[in-house]
Image (cartoon, rainbow, N blue to C red; front, side, top):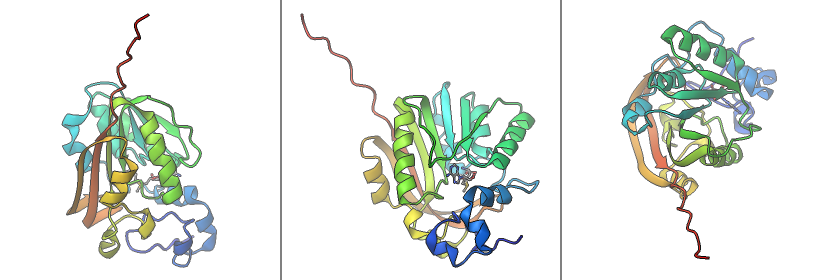
Amino acid sequence: MTLITPAGGDALPEQGALRQTLVPMTSLDNPREHWNARFAGDDYYFGTEPNRFLREHAALLPKKGRVLAVADGEGRNGVWLAEQGLDVLSIDFSPVALAKARALARERGVKLETAEADLAKWRWPRSAFTAVAAIFIQFAGPALRDRTFAGMKKALKPGGILLLQGYRPKQLEYKTGGPPIAENLYTEGLLRAAFADLEILELASHDDAIHEGRGHDGISALIDLVARKPAAPAVTRRAE
Ligand SMILES: C[S@@+](CC[C@H](N)C(=O)[O-])C[C@H]1O[C@@H](n2cnc3c(N)ncnc32)[C@H](O)[C@@H]1O
């Protein structure tokens, strides 16, 4: 069955606007199968090297501890995080992707815990991770994005670091990756408001060429966020 997507699209098939541009209609109603099909080849759709933004922020990562790789796909980022000595939980709703993530971890000789999780339903744990990596998770429209961002904040331990990279609306002109859906893309204002309760260490918009497998290839309108969850307030004891 042929699925035709606009050039470079990571599109979530159930998005209404996209329905007119994707065929056949039957594939549109099951995003999980759409992603499974995308990951079905022997190659790694987004490559096996970590995302550059993530790698360049290695110094901000904790030396040890549990880290969550959100919608980690075929595991290029989760495996790299494990190579940094971290205990990584790699979650995604595609079992095909997760099997390839485990294979990549075996090949690289690191331990990677995986869990099949649909972010529309996943019960986010509280204060469980010293870092959360969310790299290109723009399958999420506004409602799922709100849920996901709230979940990521809840899941960080106080003092934990969030590393997030995505596309800006200008990416709709470049068409080198990401969903062709304006409302899924990030602006600085959107991220600043969404993470106002975190300490924003870096928020940067930039256009750069990225080459991440077949999925993300070419000049791209990127946005990076590095934020820290505030440390828990000190408990003060009232004098008896
Ligand atoms: C653009 S890919 C990015 C993968 C990975 N973060 C990377 O940078 O290589 C988006 C990923 O989101 C996953 N995904 C899409 N919708 C999801 C959902 N509702 N719950 C969990 N994962 C989802 C897809 O299976 C895919 O692996």
